[in-house]
Amino acid sequence: MSAAEGSAAASYADAPTHSITAGGVTYAYRELGPRGGVPVVFFLHLAGNLDNWDPRVIDPIAKEHHVITFNNRGVGATNGKVPDSIEAMADDAATFIRALGLSTVDIFAFSLGGMVAQALIGKHPDLVRKLILAGTGPRGGKGMDKVARVTYFDILRATVVGADPKEFLFFNRNTAGKLAAKAFIARLQESTDGRDRPVRIQAFQAQLKAIRNWGRGAPADLSAISQPTLIANGDNDRMVPSVLSGDLHRRIAGSELVIYPDSGHGGIFQFHRQFVPLAIEFLQR
Image 1: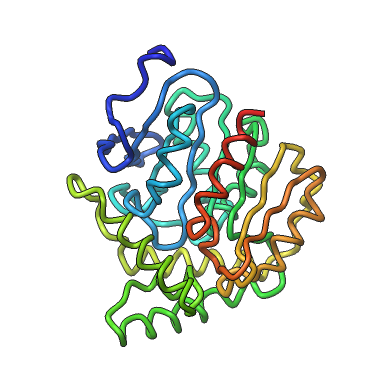
Image 2: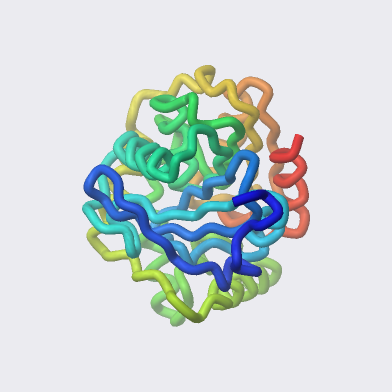
């Protein structure tokens, strides 16, 4: 298909779910935007499925780029069992990318997805041209192993008031943060047909175990990342401490860093109007 033809869907909310089988796993994925050039593959966060990508981030990028979102093994509508290591998740991601017949991709990775993306480059460096890392941290980063504790605490807080846990995990609990959280959750509901399967508790627990092991592992050698890298976060990330974004920036040669004020783990969603043009410019450079 030519770049001019592109995908039939007009927006991510309308994008149908496809599947492809490789290595004994049937991966669920969606795609949007014109074919041709280097695709942008989106790597998901903890407990996220295909419905958890913000259309205000996906849609503008997909105007100029072939965008692919997918569920890794055991997540949502993808079958199998979630691995308990980030490195195994990276191998699965490589299997999915190659199954699509792709030899080079750009990666947009958020939170857990950013850890998987770093491991992917370590194990399959030739697959990746450019890298966007948001709300994430390096293997062995200080405080990374506390993600599970913060996550369970905020799930409890959200349950008490009948809110989506992402309102607590991704956003500050001040006026600006609460407004941004409500708007973000509303955007995630724009897709009404063909909703993805919820993430199972066993999958969620396996992901948390993998993150804990990643946090307690030996510090990564980030000098191995030679790809152009854009790093973003809010200045008050409780899940993956914001200081780790600065750590990534210092250790990845030539990387760029943007920190959004008065925002948390989901800073790129709260400040999507500022972040998305920056990301598009970075990808098109």
